[in-house]
Image (cartoon, rainbow over all chains, first blue to last red; front, side, top):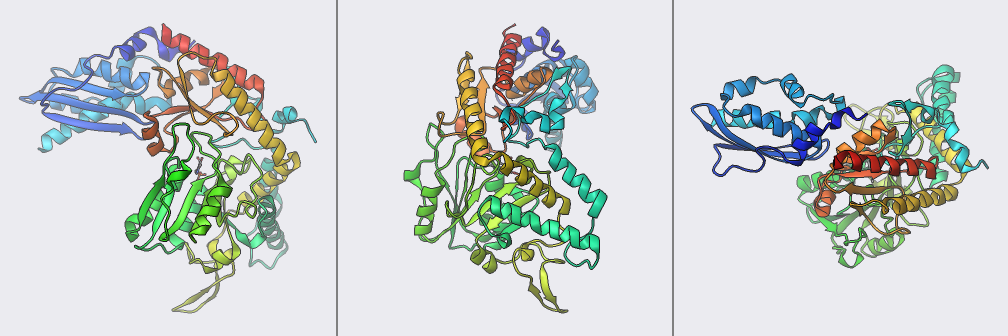
Length: 124
Length: 401
Ligand SMILES: Cc1ncc(COP(=O)(O)O)c(C=O)c1O
């Protein structure tokens, strides 16, 4: 009935992976979804252009928290350029449930945040 | 008079199904639905007498002008003002921007708003304070979601006090008469954001002694793109124009212009003619039901809504007790984000709003980043609310998995 709220997704919402903040991160970036007030802070450790570790501190809906959680598992070990190349579809496939047009921004918030963080890191 | 319960059939949109379920529309504080009569008034305008207003010397132009002016008159009567005191704008937001730009705020002034304002009645003042060096001050709110009248930061330098009549998040009905008295003792201007009050209750600008009142047509059965700024005649005459150009002048030379009389001075360019006419039709519809009936009906629905919401476990409800509120109820279900609540309700055919409600400073005070808001209008029924409650229980079940 309610396709979007499958148990697996809710499980990520209730116990998000890589949640919180890294101490002394290489980069930190805060982003919000102004439409709904969802917030995410990403902190990452980057070494030799590889994302060694990252955490998302999310305050938001099930879709945005679960997508951050699932994304965090994928990003560790990727190079910064690989992360910058990830597209929206990558996240949607990860989330794996139909996302309505109004909720796209929620699903994509964490990807945008880590990408902006990396751009900021590269500019340093 | 028709029974209020029968009125849903006047609103064609309400008979549809969404996601296979009967639509239950409870997002009226964002925008109301439109009765057939209002929809017809727009079709009629475009199929029978579409023409630009004011300067046309032909039959259609005359008819459009008369109807457009009649709309001013209808809105004026609706709030107990006179015709020239009604300025048509796009919406509440534009009405307040008009004021903030036209009032000639200066560095020595302070402007007072409240902690419960919609961004529409905050950001324009914030901006004008930035530009002029004036100071922005706030009337704080209490724990129960009412203004703390003992802490009004007014003094002799206060130029404007601008307050929502009804809060779009808390539903609080603010004590406009009391505030008006105090504001005028300091010779400040009293501006009221009536976006959430004018649709629901008889607002008499004279009785409440408002200097200015801003509201939106689309929240009171009218179309989008038409709003109102009421201003006391003698004040509007002194005010500088906001937008300039055609329609708002009495004479133009190469180097200088003179302004038209009010309200034209503030209605530059071709106005939203069909919007004004349709707002007139909306006012006719509301008056035909009677604003006191609507007020009573909505208050009853809100009090029923409060009572039923309180039956749920793990719910926080924001704003004052029954009696001091109307229009809407904002709430949160523990550990479930409002967006998820709204999404699941939508699957059940129930439309509510979820988010920061364009009141971020208030969200900060409430310590949340979003709320759920259910807002009935007079065409809603207790059954609609029962359906909402049943669906909210479903939401809790989904998240309890
Ligand atoms: C109290 C209040 N003020 C102002 C507004 C802004 O209205 P509009 O978007 O029509 O300008 C709203 C509408 O959401 C409101 O509820």
